[in-house]
Amino acid sequence: MTYLELSEDSGSAHKYYEVIVSGTDVSISYGRIGVPGQTKVSSFATAEKAQAAAQKKIDEKLRKGYAPAVRGVRQRRAVTHRPTVSRASTARRAPVLWRFASGSAAFGIFVDQERCWVGNQRGDVYKVTHDGSVVGQFRLPDGVKCIVADDFWIYAGADDGRVYDLSGKVPRVAYEIAEDVDIYWLDIYDGVLGVSDVAGRITAIDHEDEFQWERKSNGSSGWMVRCDGDAVYHGHSGGVARYDAGDGTPVWQRGIPGSVLFGWQEERSVYAGTSADRVVRLAKSDGRIEATYHCDDTIYSCATAPGGRYVFAGDSSSSVYCFDEDGTRLWKLGTGCGSALSMQYLDERLYIVTGQGTLACIDATEQAILAAQSGTVPEPVDVKAAAGLVAVEPTLVLETATHSDEGITVECFTEGDRLRVRVLSPGYDQGWNVQFPKGIREAGARYLVEGIRTATSGGFYRAYGEIRRLR
Image (cartoon, rainbow, N blue to C red):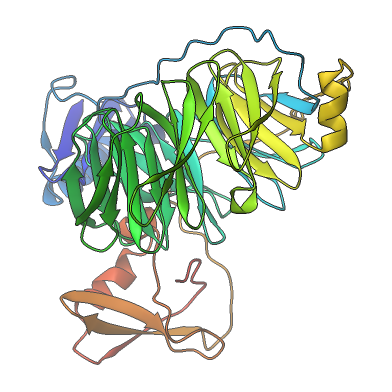
């Protein structure tokens, strides 16, 4: 048995590689340190050929910087699972149309016009239609912190420190967070990722998975980060702060009652749900408090209708609230399936994910709410995943497809101190850069990357095949 590790000071690599030879079989395991990885077993004609194949793999890893190590000396990144207490609601039941039990406590939710996404602490991510049909499942190596969208890309941040691109048929690693960062929450805008952590730090990472800037707040436990084109908004135990998106320059800092446990944003305002039983709306421009939405218990999540016309909140007593924009409480109802740890509103429906692992769709129309307040609610449909549904796991195998004899032409060029790639073939926006997913850059497309690195200034490199992802 040979056990190797590669752990860089920058935190960009924190992985292991183990080779075990048993007679004519060679077993190779690899992954992030402290996290169960993938294992492949190959059989050979003789024990000598098995030994030679194993040594070849070991030598390759040593040349790439791996070194012999003792398993267990280096630990996996620290992971904090959010402590949540969920009591039963005393309010009347909300009009839940359907509910789906994902199997584990869920924080991740994203809803668009096509489908609903839910990600849980077991690492499962499900795609569910708006009428309550499960149409897909991904299985990530570790628990899902949150699910966010950037244009038409969907990303899931996981406890293993990776951010997975879920936009294709197979999850791809898009970002890897430094090993010393205990991630609490993530958000993304135009390819720039904002990361808040246990220490109250906020970090920005660009679309090429390169560190941009980091700032330490005056608090800890950063459960809120929201990004837009101008700024990153960070909420923690000491309040809410705004930083310039480009270089992290502090713009304003605002203390508010309680610790921030969740955040939301609209075009001109950010919303912070707090341990002081309220949601606070702050102006993005200067941080002034614009409105306060008072609830009856600790706020775990919040969301708004477009433009902030309505404000929703979920508390630790399994209740959900709706407020008018000015702070007037319109209603409070019980979920019947636990406290909402994340939520989103779309087309008069409120979607929540709970500590019980349930994704629930609540009818938020005026008629349904009035009926619920009088004690009349529909019988919720319990959604089940099809028995034959296959959970798709991340892979580094490069997908290929036949395009044409001409292929796609890309150009290597320098921009400042960076080498970039853009498409020259007709039909593509010439202002877009090509971004190869991180795992593909490191594995399947290494031939292309090496060609790019050695290209002369102004030179061209012709690559044939499908380019899966363009920016």
